Length: 270
Length: 81
Image (cartoon, rainbow over all chains, first blue to last red; front, side, top):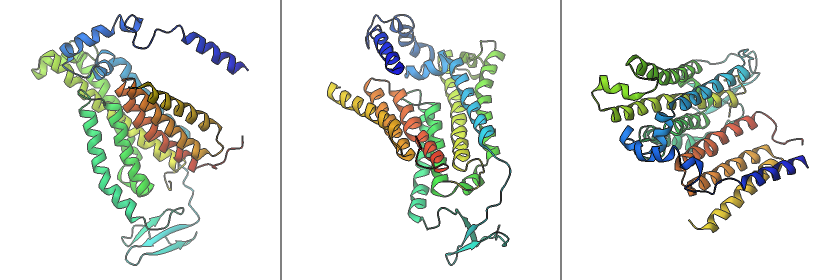
C-alpha cells in the first residue's frame, strides 16, 4: 500500500520534468552549449562524453575509480578466508593415459609432477572444445579491449568499458580452464598491485599537473614538457588517465570473480 | 526510430524486471537480470546515449551476470520466500 502510494507520488512528480530533448530545459541551457561548442577547440577530442568524463569532470571520475578500488578491497575483507582447509578428496588426471585418479585424505598427492594435472571435483570430463575455443577467442577480446580504451576519444568507449572487457576475458579464461590455473598466471597479489597502480596513475597525473604549475588534473600542463599545443596535451592527458582507469577496473573485476567463485578460498570454483 | 520498437523493448524491460523479482530459481533470476540489462542497453542506444549503452552492455549484461552466477553457484538455487 505504502509502495503504491510512494510510486504514485514519484510518477506524479515526474510529470513536472522537462520534456525529453527540450531545448529550454535547465540542463541544456547552461553548461551543455559550452561543452558542445568548445570541446573540440579545448581538448581536440571529438567524443564530447569522453572529454567531459575525464577532463572537465576529472575529479568525479577520479573518485569513481577510488570507489571501484575500495569495492574490490571491501570484497576481499568480507569474503576472503586464509585458513586453508584441506579437501577430503582430490582428483588428478594422468595426462599421457587420461586416467583420472581419486586420492582420498591421507594419500600422497602428486603435486608438482608434470604428468598429472589437478581437476575440480565438480567437473571431471574433458572439455577440449571449450578450452580450444577460448584459447582462440581470448586474444581477440583483449585486443578489442585495448582498442576500446585507446579509441575512446573518437568512438564510444573509454577506460571503464575497456577495463571491463579486459577483465571479462580473464574471467572467461578462469571459467574455461579452472580457477587454479588462472590464479597461477595472475595471482591475487599481482592483481591488487595493479589496482593500486591504476589509482596511482590517475592521482599521479593530477599531481604531475600541479608540479608543472597548473591546477590538479589540468592536463594542459603537459604542453610545457611534451612540446604540444595545450589542446592535444589535454587529449594525451585524457588517454593516460583512461589507461589508469582501465587497469583498476580490470583488476577489480577479476578479483571479484576470484573471491565470489571460490567463496574466498581461491582453491576450486566455477 | 519508430515508436513501436521502443514500446516493445520497454515492455520487455518491465516484464524482465518483474519476473526477475518474482521467480523462485536464483539462477534464472540472474539470467533474467542479464536480459533486463541488455534491453536497457538497447533503450539507451535508441535514446542516443551510446556511451552509457556500451557501459550497460559490458558491465550489466556481461560481468555482473557472471558474478551473479558465481554467487548462486556457492548457495542453493531455490529461494525459500
